[in-house]
Amino acid sequence: MAHPNGTNEPHVDHALLRARDKLDEALARNPEQPGLLMMRARAASRCEPADEAGAWWLRAAQAHEGRPEAIDCLREAASCLQQAGAGDDACDTWEQVLELDASDGHRLAFGRCLHDLGHRDQARRELQAVADCGDHDLAGQACELLARFTPDPLPWARQGVEHAAKARQRPEFGRRLVQLSALHREAGDVRKAEAYLERARPYLSDDTTSASARSG
Image 1 (tube, one colour):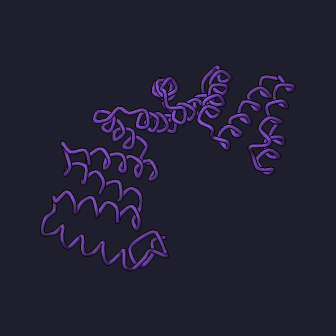
Image 2 (cartoon, one colour):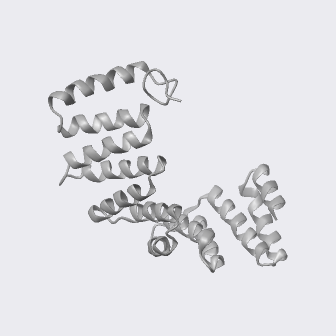
């Protein structure tokens, strides 16, 4: 239920709402001013529903067309649209981002969006490209996600563990060992499952390892 101040957030800072109103007044006089639109989009992200914030970011991106800021605006728009449940619009926006900057981070975000929509073949192609990149953080995230839905998940899960080790990411290393343990358990290899879970224990909280053991 919407709050009386017109937002979905009951504790929005009134100073922020006043600033938003002033931006609306300025935009009424100059509706396509890029800087004003970006500030308005930032305000919307903090005090308005995600779909409305996404619409503001798209307007800001259009106003910044041909400038580096357009990429930032489109990325924010895609995230807001995905948060709002508008998956198809989010994917379309991520495609626009990739046309301007096909970085591994953007490709990973696009792959996640496709996966969430159930477009698994296309998601796999995008994520596999990231899994082969030289950034152990991004590659590890891609491998972890690929291990959740590909027909042969174990190689991806092992690669995810290796990337976490190379990136020296202790929580991710432990979590991916748990993922690898669960996959071996599903495959009927209880010995390896227990070995990987035991190896993960120093990197995880007691709650995490207990839940993982119960799920087996």
